[in-house]
Image (cartoon, rainbow, N blue to C red; front, top):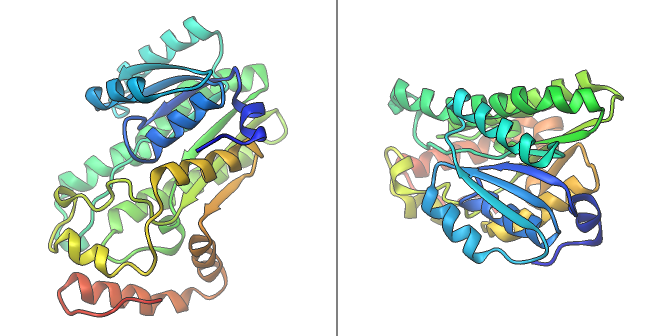
Length: 281
């Protein structure tokens, strides 16, 4: 997809650090940022995915890739030091790395909970701790955190994932209150259903992938379209970016009529447990 004028203005020539860049929304972000003229430092544990990203990227920007585990603070610190030495400053930090894990809470082993929270939450904390002080010192920069509409609404069979995204949402709000008017911006992005590997078989405990996808109440958005909505919101400096319309509707319900979400949650739970159901339209 093509960048908007606001994207080109916001990201053209900017130095961007993007985690989780090899797949899903992150891959879409990297490609669109490159078309917008940004200098992107793409980080991910998937080295092969990063290599293919470089081959596919096009536009006036640049992509520099580095294999990195965001849970490894020491390695992350060295990467940030190298980026600053190379570019002088980091204008945008996209804390986007994340994983999913679906299944009833009672069936998720503790080790898997820790694995998910270390990536989804502590990965963002690591990035912020390493980049935020320099942004404060110079009085400019933008931290963008990828949350999820599930972090606001809750989601049956995704307790670990929703807990991590709720934490990201409140982390962003709190950080925004701290930065005040010193020139640093904090954005949080809450996508709805995106076809980004969320329903991978190896991350679902207790039901088949096809059964879950069949009962989704709305169609999944492509990572490329999600990235476009994501960057449009960031380029316009929106504090909370929610898309598509179905996600904004769920946000509204969670704020004003949270009880109305329960029938959907319970129906989805029955499907997960093999009880059938047609979902909610």
